[in-house]
Length: 99
Image (cartoon, rainbow, N blue to C red; front, side, top):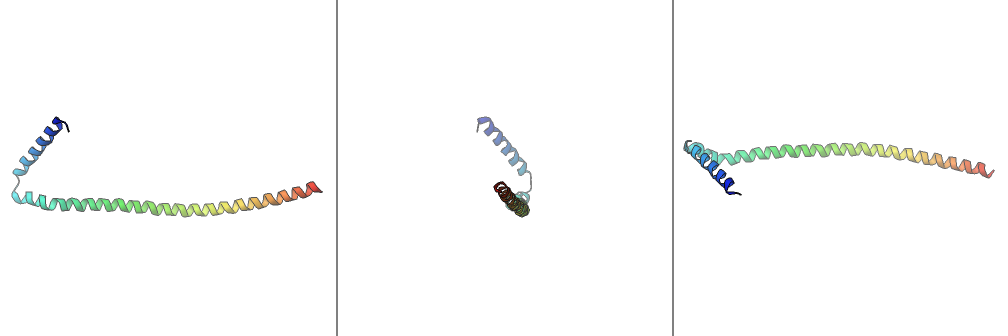
């Protein structure tokens, strides 16, 4: 940190301490004791919401994979039918060329 940044930080900290000094003692203690608990609960709530969003994303991905699996199965059937048809066509053409 540069000296200017340190000076700005200390000035800001002094202003905060000066303003807190005018608060009643119970308010300051309440903020020091209960403030971190409230902050922890808020952070936990936000983290849980993010986790739920990730779970929804994975559930949507599972649905996508299932639908892709169905498409791939249909495509496999089409490829197999085309291969069988081309094999039969090749056999017929080979039979006519021999005759």
